[in-house]
Each structure stands twice: as structure tokens, then as C-alpha cells.
View 1 (cartoon, one colour):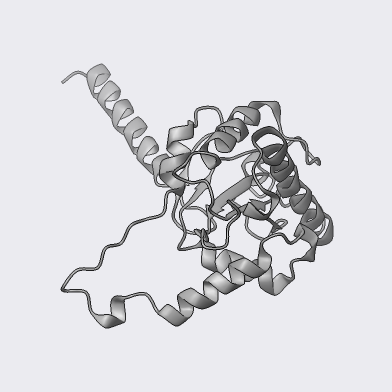
View 2 (spheres, helix red, strand yellow):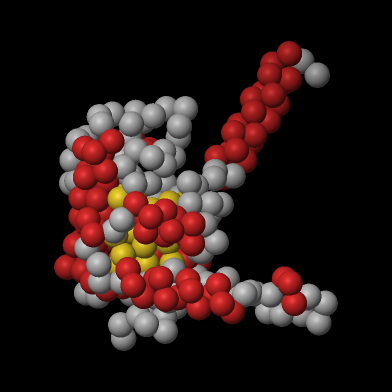
Amino acid sequence: MSRLAMSRVAGRTLAAIVSIVAVGAVLSFGIGTALAADDVTEDQIIKALAPTKKPLTRGLSVGQQADPAATAAETKFVSTIRGRTTRSLSITEREEIATIAKDKPNIDLEITFDYNSADISQKSLPAVQALGRALTNPDLKGSTFVVAGHTDAAGGDSYNQDLSERRADSIKRYLMDKYGIGAADLVTVGYGKSKLKDPSQPLAEVNRRVQVVNMENKTTASK
């Protein structure tokens, strides 16, 4: 094989490896689906946020089954944060949301914002609109969704916490105004710069984002 041919093969192999690494991205709320804002579709969001069905089998031991008490406690907690304002959540409650969210269907749409602002960037509007259509789809409608705001690492903790809360609120207002989603069905929370998507590049745009998690609390969701 000629050097030129070998070079082309090596190039294709490297491109394939890069693609695999990109697809295997890990979210700060746990392993989930990561989709770029400029190509995400309503169907992809629905699939990512759809509750996972875990049917019991004869070989499943009691220890492997969900703890009814823990499930009840989780449901009760989610009920207490529905309808709350973003700023009213305590640090403990914010971390409890993050803990529960790790095992829930989630998606990182990489919804970005203008620098130092809570204004949704123009390039991210299609993703927010796809999210609005998805959350009003019969397969998801009625669940309680967490909308979590994040910032990059520029600035102090207090400032970034406030900015992340305003960014989450910005998405919530858009979804309520444009798609009629009930306020209580969207729990907004801010994490400031405490949960960077890319810690190796703390100032990168990718860190200025909003994550969405399906808390699957339909028993108390508004109809």
C-alpha cells in the first residue's frame, strides 16, 4: 500500500475514533444523551426523556427491586419543589435534585446564552423550540421536568449562581409563553459554575447551558 493510501486510511480511522468519543459524552447529571443545539429534533428529545421501562423478571431478586420507601420519599420530595421559585431552593435541595436526576431520563441540549447574559442565543432557539414541542407531546406531557441552568467559570460563585438561575428561568418563561406548559411542571434550579460540562475548558461556551431532566412525577403533575 502506498504512503498516500496509508495516510488516507489513518485519517479515516482517526475521524471514526473522534466521532465515537463525541457520541460517548458524559453529562454532569449522569450518563445521558448529548445533542448539539443546531441539529436536535423533537423526536430525539422525546426518546431521551421518555421514562425507562424496567419490567421485573422471575430471576430478579428482592434486593434488586426498587425500594418502595425510597420511591415514596423521592415522589414526596419532587412534590415539595413543584411550583417553587428558583431562588427559594436551598443548597441541600439543589443537591438532592442533582442526586435524583442522575437516575432519570435526561438530555443536554447545549442551549447556550449570550456572554454574561440570560438571553438565549439565536443559534439555540431551534433547540428550545424543539424542546417545547417535545414536552407537550402526549408521551411526555404531565411529567415534572427539571430545567437546570449552568454558567462557565468566569466570575465569582455568587454572581454565577444568580446568572445560572436567571438562565433557567429564561427557558421556563419561553416554554410557558410559547407552548403553554404549566409553571409547576417546570422546576428551575441553578448550579452556577459548580458542575461544568467541560472542566478542562472552564471558560468554554459549552459550559453556559441548560440541562433538562424528566423527574417522572406524573401522579402530582398538573393535567
